[in-house]
Length: 255
Image (cartoon, rainbow, N blue to C red; front, side, top):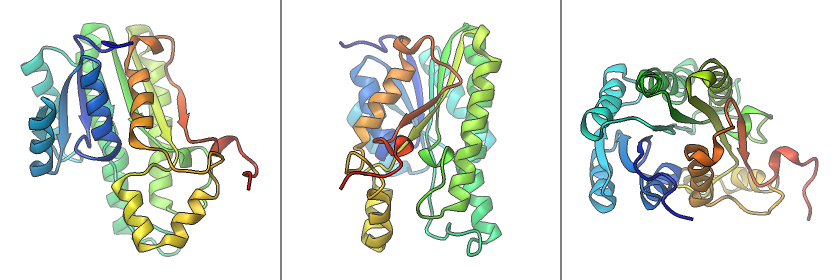
């Protein structure tokens, strides 16, 4: 099957690496016009040149930047059909609540949670005017269960994303706009690779809980985003969409 997003305009935040980049590629393969919002101007420009996407430098914690990102999609390409609100961070200073200071807490909430609020707030008027749209917000499996390695700010932010997505999905369902929370398990991204390099023991504690015995590849998560963005998921909204290799369903994992 191909052309599942033919004629649709998608905005992807954090689209220059990891899950975001894999999703940009899959969206384009399926016919979408993609606008990337990212803080990394050099990388974002390179990805846009390579893929044919439009790049907009965007600090997702800035309302002005986010508003301009979605306005650009509408102005340049004519619509906003899909919003994949994916940008996020997981800094090393985010650990146990006993060790994580207020500055780190606030930074993670701004990037991971407030940014999703801003993106939804910016995207929804365009979608409501059109009478259709799909919003996919990146939460995490830690939004539905405790993490094996504590990241108090990250876990709390992703729980907020999940709750907000549910509420928006219910609120706007009859107006043609679907909102779902994507909840990936651990993914083989630069963030995870950095964790392996810095703290292999901590990374291994994550892997042992994955029943399939490995981390996800970014394209596997991108395929789930593609499904939620496409009309194939037309009856799915306010959903907790887990793509976690069985973590949330396991009591123990096989040896």
